[in-house]
Length: 341
Image (cartoon, rainbow, N blue to C red; front, side, top):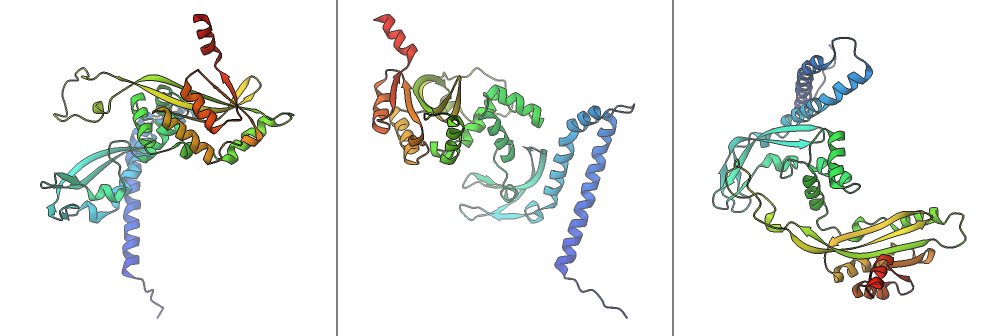
């Protein structure tokens, strides 16, 4: 008589759970093969045709895989009959299941989950959304991060086009702006600035083979820009489907102030740090003070040159923070006043 293998109930459940998930993933893959076979050319396709076809249908597969895995996890939250209200602790019955579709980089994921609404607090929650860390809105974290990566490198319209080509998803230039604005909430200049080590590396590259220290320029300026008022943001109460109407608001002109540090390398410039935002001159001065206090600019290894127009607020902060810097009045600003004179 041989030895019997003793396994725990948890191990049996885990094996069963894994086997069921693999079966469902195989079924999902089989369903994806049908449109793939229909899209492939009947004659022997080239590598480029195969690649193009698979690329066009990739999110149907990867999104389906993600959806299958999500539906197979958190069963207790998908079938929860009751839940206490997070605010008043009233026991709430489940509504639904309520359908919701979200967009991820791997594709669309459809969710069917119970929804709980408290009439006293006038607030609703979905435990499955909380368990999966699903963000409010259609676009999820990975999509938002990818959109911000594009939008912080190129203009919003260009970022929208490039993002659509690479991801197969559509995010308008306005959506790019909104996502970037949300991602930047609460960030300061030190949070987005390169480290001192990175700045020193760029300085060393420009200084290589030169006798004198490289020139580090600091440009400071302000300009009025049209902005959308906060009252115009967000959804409006009313029916979900109605004919679009002309906006009842007009843009507001506000002054955006900013600064940029850059190295002069012959006929080109090497970007170091920039910071632009809609705020007053005192806040810009505080941002420059943070840069100086964090020692992000290696003043001892560069020749600092500040260029700006004749605004008094610019030179007040320059004199207070960088008194040894060479101060240069912008040529075109100077020429304009010379002509008037």
